[in-house]
Image (cartoon, rainbow, N blue to C red; front, side):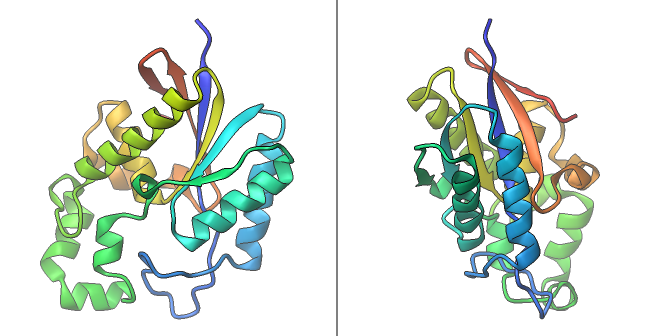
Amino acid sequence: MRFAKIFLVRHGEVVNHKNIIYGYLPVPLSAKGKAQARKVGFFLKKKNIGAIFASPQRRCQQTAKIIKRVIGGKQKVAASKNLRESGFGHFVQGLTQREVCEKYPKQWLIYNRQPAKAKAGESLAKMADRMLKAINQGIKKYPGQNLVFVSHRDPILAALLKISKRSFNDLHKVKPICDKGAICEVWSAGKRLINKNF
């Protein structure tokens, strides 16, 4: 059976001088973030990418367009709202972590200790479902082709945890694999998705 490869890419570093949680805010990539996106592009250049999908947030759109430019193919960058930032990130956007602790202490504690129970903004289960919907729609549109999905840390990790049938409480344990500019690989075999990261 032929395996199509799905590359889940986290956007590059952003300009964030105030160290806030940026949620849906239109923060741009920093110079380092643009370099990270180019590095991803060079990695993907020989992967025969059929299509690129990206979150509507500015940082993901910028990352995807840089990847496309480096790859040099005819792919268009298609925006998908199902790849958007987490609802929790949107819920606390514009605040520093300290301000979140002070303003929403209960929600912050749950998110950090039992993320499977976190419901402020959006649950991880709903996040995983919408991410997998975007991925499966891409696979259906481009069967057998290698695809790129540019998104955000928690949505990517939620999808990977669900694919692996692991608890959403493991969110913080797997965070190191999804730093800014990281690439997570999933294989598509028929209707089955296989997480190649953990």
